[in-house]
Image 1 (cartoon, rainbow, N blue to C red):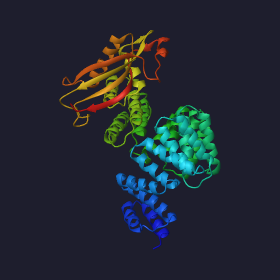
Image 2 (image 1 turned 180 degrees about the horizontal axis):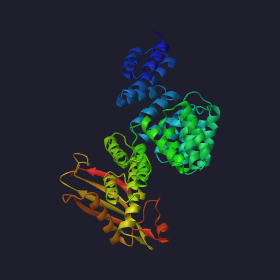
Image 3 (image 1 turned 45 degrees about the vertical axis):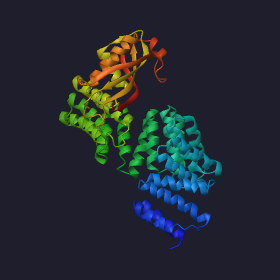
Amino acid sequence: MKLRAQLDAAATLLDEGAARSAVRMLRSSWEPELCVDDLVPLYCMWVRALCDVGELDHARTLAERAADEFPREPDVQIAVGNVYDLLGQLEKARDAFQAAIESAPGGALQFYNLGAVLERLGDEDGAETCYREATAIETEGNTLFEASAALGALLRRTGRLEEAAGVYDSYLDGDPINVDLLVEHGICLSDLDTYEEAIDRFELALTLDGEHAGAWYNLAITQYRMGRHEEALASMQCARDVDPQSPLTLAVLGSWQLVRALNPVEGADFDESLANLYGALDMLHRLDGDGLSPNYAGLVCEEVFEALWQNDRLGEAREVARMAGQRDWITAHMLNALNEADHGRAPEVETFTVQARAESGEAPEYWPSDAQGFTTGLTVLAANEDEAREYSLAYLRGLEPSPAIDFRIETVRAGGPEEIPGAEFSMQPRARGVVGVARTRSYFRL
């Protein structure tokens, strides 16, 4: 079999999930006398296959060897960048994608990949520039879609909804039946309060793919915003039916059902509403440690907390908040609700950042099995340092009630993270107490 045919066969194997067979085929295809036009695609395909089977160290070795031989080949540099990205070495991935752009500035893929890495490095301006470059280059395949989706998501996250809608519109002009972009556009339109247009997008997406969970979920959210609560409930039940493993869908459904059950409506089921709310939390526990996003987990916990809190199930809501705090899933909204209830508001407060340490000879079940303590950082609103220290200890002891855990405050300094400027709170009464996690838990052994 000629090399090109072998590469095509290996690509098919990768697409079908048979990566180990692809690795064996590619390994047997390598010969030292192969020409450049054959070696470059062979190296790139081989690196991809090794990544697919999880042999990242071997993939890195092979990619670096290929880069040494062909430092000006953009496909090789892209392969190198992809490996470093998977290894979490984002600065090296950035450098490789930049090298690919220098070698071939007309390639959309290297701009998109660089943008994705820059975004994770916190350089949103650089990421936006790269995404825009990628969307401006005519290309085939998924790159234009991925770049458009990433650019739209970045713009939405930074509050530039009109610009995001324009990005989705532009893409859909050329590919009007792309279901995922129809849904993303619908979400954006819904956030802009353009509800009817948003519903048109979701309904078209569902015409094309009736089991698209995201379309059902966001259709339900939009209907609820419009006051069409019964339709929203039916749509959210459809979202649950097509994706029964979504904690957020289950939490929102349970929240709506609880309101309905407490304001008697025919067919309302109080027990089912609570089962869905607690079922959402159970799903989070099962997913914990398996790539679960803390932000997503926080969103689910907040939905469950709010449903219980607003319906006077305060003790249960506090337990949800305690569980969320133990795992750094607690949100600012949850903390504010608790602070108002426990500490009240004060007209003059300052922001403090508190560094705390906990030690225990016996780890609770939700700590890593070999952990003997953790350090964390908290953002606190208080009248003075002593009060900030008091609120921090009370918060931590509330999360970790075991007498075997010893807490101490290591530092208290005025000021908070950039997103919570201290000056903001001197102008208006605010609920005092812990208002955020400035630094997530770092567990250690003694």
